[in-house]
Image (cartoon, rainbow, N blue to C red):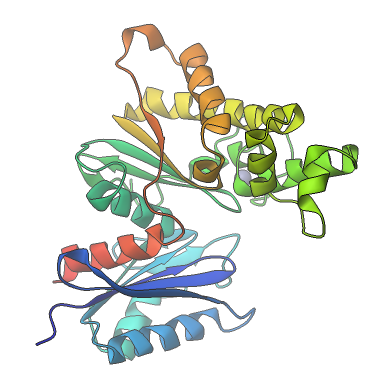
Length: 309
Ligand SMILES: [Zn+2]
């Protein structure tokens, strides 16, 4: 007898990732594939059909961008094509099984809350570092969505004269702190010091955040300074969010989790410096996520289990 099977799908700007979970959230299989430039929805529907053919009784989908809840309409996002696409309604009718659609970072937060680094907490903030910053806000053990779109914290404006953001405005938080920003700093360092530690690590590859992390671990001062700069901006933004949400824990995923303490320690120091009344508040753990790139897909399957079955 086959037990319960639920599929989770995470639609990003470049890749779609998926998991098939069994009873007790046991991971039966997972994978990722590159999305086409055109026909993203159709590619997601094809993947959903394959997972239903493999026994999925419900499907959860996360999409990067603004998603209306509970309708599951993908309204808009800077990284995923399409405007006002009724993802949930179209997928449910194509797949013939109950389907739920939410913002991808909300789902990553749900995965960390139920099975990962935020497990056991009541209030948590999850930040994922990719092309930008995604955030999931957990309040009273549930995803806080506001009217619909709460958690677009990467677009808090920290400097109105700052760098241009993908959203079209200037000085958003994610122009100072994101996986892309780490890649950009790595490229700058490699250019500036062609004989330096970073340039040697990069060799034939494109410079990326992970080279910064490796060079910092090997003791390179320039790489450490770059991670400390990004960490400082991370901490200042987190401090702002703490004044609003007062979470019990802040979990960081993606490139920030990989960078580890060379990025997180400067962030912790910045929080202690700028958070109002920091010395009177309980310690706020700022910790790496338990899930890697599959967090959104796992969270999508969990949401499908909790809301549909
Ligand atoms: Zn922005």
